[in-house]
Image 1 (cartoon, rainbow, N blue to C red):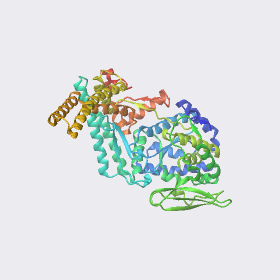
Image 2: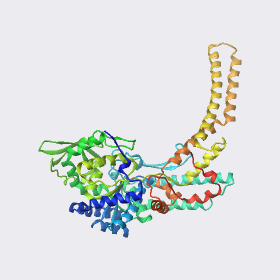
Image 3: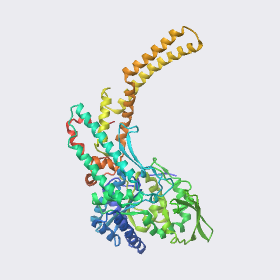
Image 4: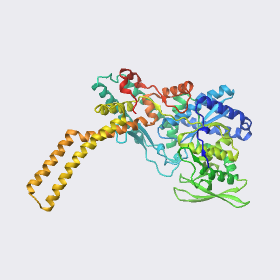
Length: 571
């Protein structure tokens, strides 16, 4: 089969995206006013309101959009797992949808609602739902990991919220990370006669304090781990940023799509065949995971077990008979055989509250049920989106534009500055101006020292062999061994081998820090939460390119004017 053209399915800039969404809405406007879509939107509004009441983010702007949801409107959508102190890509989805909504509202003259689905029924095994990274060049892996241990094979909404001890432990770790980086940078400035951090210190600590108030408020309001993370997200988006984004838990709102799930089951042969076909498609480049080989045999939803896990169900149906799904819960191993009624006209109303969409069907049921005019995706789900589009075309489900905005933000945070100063300290001793050159020289120096040590070690081994064989003067041979050991010690000390090895690891970590897409904590501390949104919005209005890196101004930017040579990019 021919390769799927990734770029042709996505928009490269905001202007192109606005036009694509407007055209999609106009082409499908009549379908979006159908009774079933109006009903789904009204049903969704109650679950949205429930989330925002629980979170404490039922602002007047949010309430106005909930009311719009019950009437004629355009719906833009995105979704994500409730990650622990989520990285920027999660929040960036909300910003793109917000800006896009305002543009479309002016263009179309219709209220535009941006909806954020919280995938709280995903499993606990994803790395980013249980860990969050901050740049820390002197640490072993170049990062500080904020982590939580979660039970395996459990849905996120069935995990209780973290203990207060763990929450306080995270706070202590982050404060220590911030203090260490600030002190490290300040010492470097002092030793090299550069302006000190001065007033930047209280700003950095104040920014962290503001974020942690949000974290603590979310913690007080939540009952589950997934709500803790989702509430932090909503409080940033709805309270700090002032967006009218509507959040809802998938664990609540997906039950309104029983008819859409039933439609997929009624067309299971076509659905399954199209999954097999997209599984055989090749891509221009690796863009993430897609459907597994088993997917065409599975019903389009998970079945939730009483133990808090969920089972995948294999589809079976007799000619002209009933359809069933059978499978085992991976958590407690209980077996299930669920009847769906007639194969050509299945009825899922009795189990709607116990099912949730698998990856590709998630887009299909929401798009068909709500009449979505745009879905902002992520890099990790690109292949799923491509495959879902193919399946939707087969089943005649309108599939909206699906942009992705996940460039690399560039800003000088305290962790990034510490990494740069460490780079300058190490590379400066070798008179090299790029990381690759510094690594090459440092590796060469370490190899030279080790070669000298290895040659002496080989001499020791030869002498030791003579001692074992009892040949030669034993006293003299032992003196030679001792002399060689002393020579090795001198080489280690004079070359500072242990320091060289330590510096090599730090130099390797510099690239880790500069390539890291960190937790929102890093943005909050170094850029400021409100400023983070303001600068993203300004970039979209001024530039609009959805693939270029974004340069943000941070708390430490005013320090850059004193010596720009110290802040040249790492190659």
